[in-house]
Image 1 (spheres, rainbow, N blue to C red):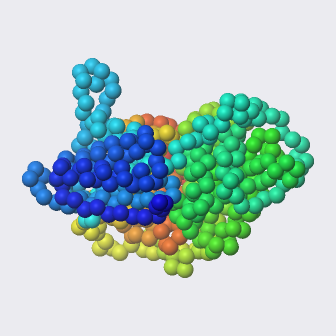
Image 2: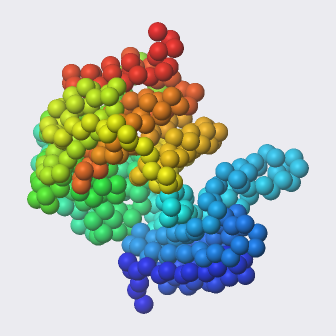
Image 3: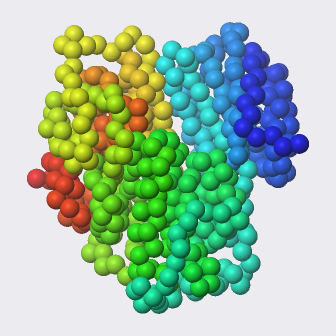
Length: 504
């Protein structure tokens, strides 16, 4: 039996004795999905910890309330979301597990939450305001990465290929077309040869995930093939995970021997044409600022800058590129409209109104600029906030989906928690179509956030992005820009950075 794209809802009362029923259902689904035995056991343990912690911490003693568990059978794996409306479950009430403390006095405080993060591949909390909170966990079905697939000889060859001399420019004829399912492993091999295991988009190293994401439409991959031998020279894709109608151009990899042939430029043209054919709102990309090559490539196709995310990724040393200073990677967001939303308005904060107006001019957007009502107050309800953390790059994103009266203290609480966890870069995303963004922006800046730019979106869901650096200072003198517009955004961001103001 094959099950895919199914949702199963289970509602139980907060009775610990019913936990076994939830675990049994999770095991049955994982087995039917043909997870390996070791991963089935991890799913069981992950569900036990997630649901058990909610039953234990989200309700008063003796209180009888419902807990809804939604199992999502997806092409990439199994997702489990746990919804509750009791006392809001706050992971902060569970002490952080310390292996060092455990070795000293056998203290196992927080061990369950620590193990949950080890068992599952993704883990997040979402505050749905008056609708309660959601704990979301996910386990990938395809956990064999390329290193487990290649034999030792193939690995050695891929490593050796990284040192190959580039072929003369224009010496290779190639064809660009969409990815075929059986070529997914070659795409992973291309990324492995190009970057080793340093590429930020982890899914590229799992051939089955590449295949499944293309089948579901979350990834739209194109490849450049050598006409002479059929070798995959380069790969690039539209990523539709965050906003399906304004995807990111990314997951780009070109084997070192084929660099300089122009295939990435050809892939970008093919992807932009595909986006136009599908009538997407537009596309965006992330240009590296250690050098300006990727920025220039996007500018060539009309993608203009809208934000500068300083300290957006780990320090990286680029082969063959002179770097006078190695620091955390900064990223320039660049985008192009293809079909601007018909209803498009924004409420820019007064202190950033002129800069935001300029940025919309850069990207050729024309939203209605609205004034906030004088008597505006946050509604007397809880905010809807989504927190995402990437422990690999030490970056977190706080998304305010809708404002409530607790918006500023909730952001402050999450900020404090993330700083304790030693997250270095924290990005706050505020809905520009909501006038409360304009009203409360200054309050968030008092917490230490400062201007980054805007992120356009489909369906009038543009965001203002503020950023926070946790005991880390960026040296703006070593951020490379590729056009006057990006330099203007950089100068403005620098003028808003509290670290710069303290040293000036």
